[in-house]
Length: 207
Ligand SMILES: Nc1ncnc2c1ncn2[C@@H]1O[C@H](COP(=O)(O)OP(=O)(O)OP(=O)(O)O)[C@@H](O)[C@H]1O
Ligand SMILES: Nc1ccn([C@H]2C[C@H](O)[C@@H](COP(=O)(O)O)O2)c(=O)n1
Image (cartoon, rainbow, N blue to C red):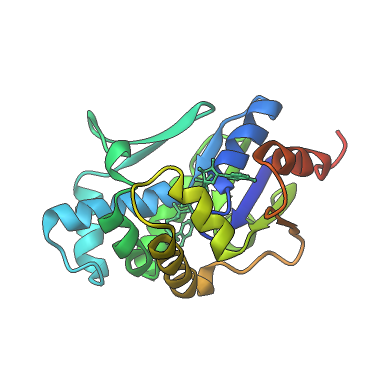
């Protein structure tokens, strides 16, 4: 079975997916990392991030590969581990432009659909565009302030600046961040990480 966990930026998608996947004994798939890898490779090549053809040429010349381990996802390009470079502020700033390109979205979707099932898939459109047949779908939300405070505990930037960047990324990602009609929406604001994981596990269909 595929379980999808979508939601807004920094709503807890990857942490919650990791916990749910661990409880189910399956890997989780972090789709945003492939958009981040496309952005990083475009930046390193000096490509205009709005130029889909140039980005796809980069991606096809040396394709990044997602490794969906239960313990955490990694992205490889040949023998190079791109993962440590995927959450920098410059990748954060450029990734929404790259993720808005239909050609790049089709490339990412093809990588995801080729992965062996079962798994927990997290992102923005896992339950709508990529895996509409998923057995259970969830959508995580929280206010920008709550999300910024959580992020501030792991980054050196000020909470106000993080909040402003999150609000901007929410705006840019609006089109692909619509909850599936059959998704269970969870406001994580008043819940601990374990509380959200438990809510997802409680919302799964009985075997
Ligand atoms: N319910 C929660 N309570 C407290 N902290 C949480 C909760 N959920 C997630 N966090 C923390 O919030 C931060 C962001 O979580 P995470 O990286 O999982 O979000 P994300 O939605 O995958 O982010 P992004 O959209 O940037 O990929 C992490 O530090 C995580 O530990
Ligand atoms: N399925 C997805 C996953 C991610 N994106 C975009 C939205 C974000 O700006 C960017 C990085 O995602 P994150 O790591 O913050 O979850 O990628 C998307 O459009 N569709």
